[in-house]
Length: 129
Image (cartoon, rainbow, N blue to C red; front, side, top):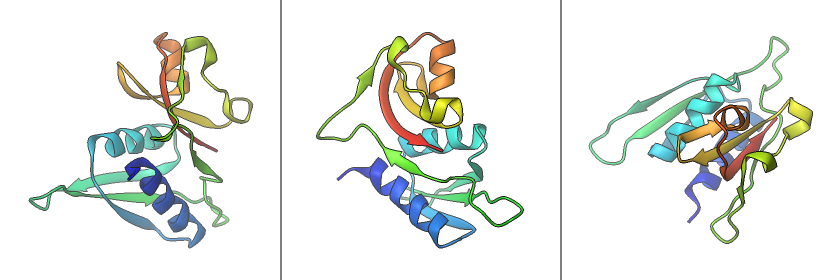
C-alpha cells in the first residue's frame, strides 16, 4: 500500500470538503512532507500525538479570506510501481515556480527549491499548487 498516496488523498478530500483539519497515521516520511508544506505556506500547522502505537498526525489546512483552499491541487509523482528520480538539473518547476515539488533526498525531505540550493537530486514524491 502506498502510504504517501493515502496521505495526499486524505488532504485532497478534506480540502474539497472544506474541513479545518484532517487526521492521518503518522510516519517520518509523512512528517517530512507536512513540514515542507507548512514551511512553504500550504498548510497552517501539523502536530503529532503519540498513542502508544504508530501515532496520529493532525494536519490543519489553510484557507484564504474568501474561503478558498490554498492547496488547489496535490498529486503523487513517484509511485511504488514507478519511481521517479531526478538529478539537480531535472528538478521539475511546478506551474513556472508558483507550485512546489517535494523531494526525498539524502539531506531529508525538502522542497524542489531547497534541493536546488543544496545541489542534490532525489525522488520526486509529489507536486502541490
